[in-house]
Length: 126
Image (cartoon, rainbow, N blue to C red; front, side, top):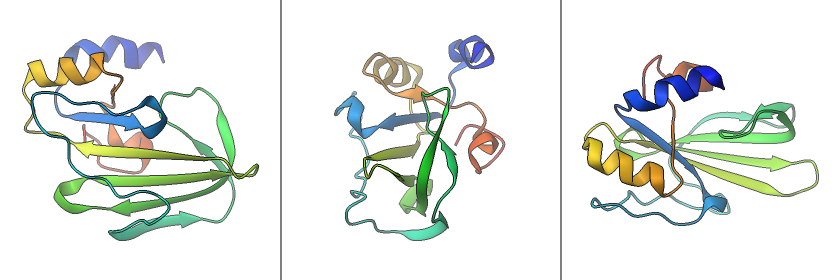
């Protein structure tokens, strides 16, 4: 976590949000993400059960997890815990955002992920 906090000032490309954080808007219109109740895109990976990490949380959760590749390099992650509660994570490949837009989104609750390989993606901001 300390490593992520140290990297936050070097925002470059990628922002992530969890649906429960609420809607956010910046100067640019956010991409549309499908709901996990009706996912679209290409299924990248799916686990029926296991321990899964959720962006913004320090521990692991037990349950199922499915990840879908969407248009423009965006990704949808759908997690369903063993108690049937769910978390949708929208991974926005935001390489064309300005620093001002990134700062605005960060202030609205989005999270920066500097290394996608920690989440099964590319070893750079996705």
